[in-house]
Amino acid sequence: MKIINKIEDLKNEIKNLKSTKPGTIGLVPTMGALHKGHLSLIEKCRQENKIAIVSVFVNPTQFGPNEDYDKYPRTLEDDAQLCENAGIDIVFAPSPRDIYDEYYFKHKETTLICPPYEVVNKLCGKARPGHFDGVCTIVGKLFNITKANKAYFGQKDAQQLFIIQKMVRELNFDIEIVPCPIVRETDGLALSSRNTYLDEKARKSALSISRALFKAKELRTKGVIETQTLIDTALAYINMGGNMETEYAEIVSVDTFEKIDIIEENKKALMLIAAKVNVEDSNSGNCYQVRLIDNIEL
Ligand code: PAF
Image (cartoon, rainbow, N blue to C red; front, side, top):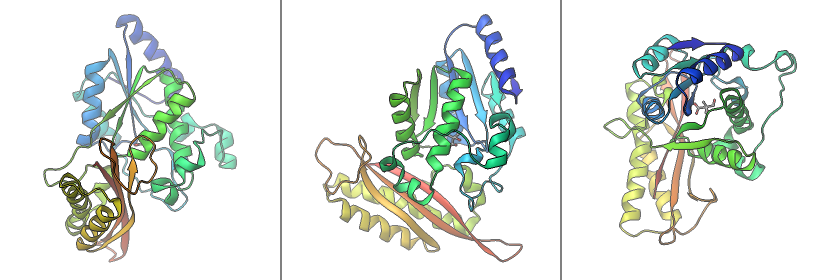
């Protein structure tokens, strides 16, 4: 396995590999701090393609000014080891200067892929203005650089997946997007790189998010179709976790990502939650918040 930083080196290596093992190229775009959730994507990518690439890049254009870009966990050595064990051919780990040109660093602006306002100005995008422009831009760049045939994305970032699928359709990217199921701890907590910020107490509180989703699913299975009832129940469960601040709890149609009031028979709906967990820094005694997201199909 090779670890490559520069775009030109990556292109050359892909060319070399293609001549020795022709077939499809699979890409798993990540920001590193790989966990079992990422590994499920990586393993699927390995199984389905001749050449398997994992990108590890904490993308500055998708973070807001007061977000955790600087603090985001960076564990390239461990990530590379996991990729090597999984039989990956290339880890592409560029620096921001390998990806964005001088203009960006001077003016804090670059050419962006901007999905329509209606799809980004809700759920995660509402609290994180510009986030999905940054995501689509880096993902589009990675598609162009690698010329991958398939790319693998986790369903935990459901709005991201929906927006990327829309981008691929509307901008005619010649790539198949492969959605991969959420991976959970045995107690239900959805795996996330941001879980590393949680201490034991915060982790316990965070569990209320998946509990809220499971409860809503249970009620739905019992025949409840009014989304407000399901949302109110979920909110009550999150509050029970203590130390939690709900950013949103919404139910949307899987097909349109628009809010719905009633879940119609044979129509798929998705409940999505974002909540912040308060964590106390054991050294300074200061409090900080960790933002977590999760979802479930109803
Ligand atoms: O989901 C992520 O980790 C990131 O948003 C992605 C898709 C790798 C783009 O930076």
